[in-house]
Image 1 (cartoon, helix red, strand yellow):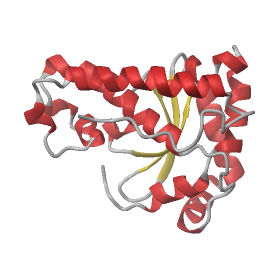
Image 2 (cartoon, rainbow, N blue to C red; image 1 turned 45 degrees about the horizontal axis):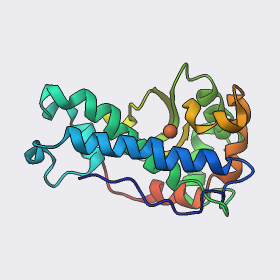
Image 3 (tube, protein in one colour; image 1 turned 60 degrees about the vertical axis):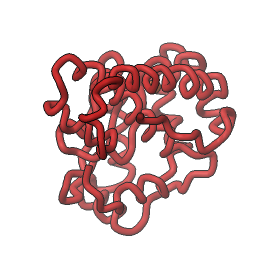
Image 4 (cartoon, protein in one colour; image 1 turned 180 degrees about the vertical axis):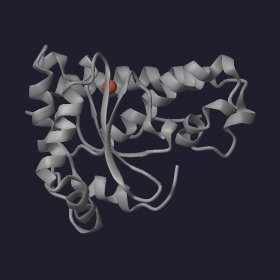
Length: 205
Ligand SMILES: [Fe+2]
């Protein structure tokens, strides 16, 4: 049984950048559906999930019987990606990273501003539904990737530490077709304390 995270703030806490109705529907309806469908797909396959985190299950997708792989990629990815997304947002975010993460950002991107610009562009230009991600590899090297639908970077041995959900359900009620405005605004509620914690966490997938 794999679960969605408990939302660490109220539905209206991210206003005015992300509106209450969107957070409520996104968390209670969309994420709920991924969670329900994932666990339904895994019914009867308990031997494959024993002792595995959700990300391990997704990363080792080839170990699963073929008939449930698409459901795990889509719904397992749906739970994992959303759990990350909701966890790195906060009404009282730390506005900038410090320490090791900031050093690595400066080394890789030149500056925090450059990173933000690159991830903003990756997210805006993700064709159709998907996500922009800041990921680290096993050596702590950072990069920006985008993925379609609910595909997770863990399938490529990358650990996502920040993500921007650009499915229309993440912004359409407030921003309509203006994805770029949503992506630019989301930086106001991205909590670098959380991102930094994930960067410094030395566990692998
Ligand atoms: Fe979403």
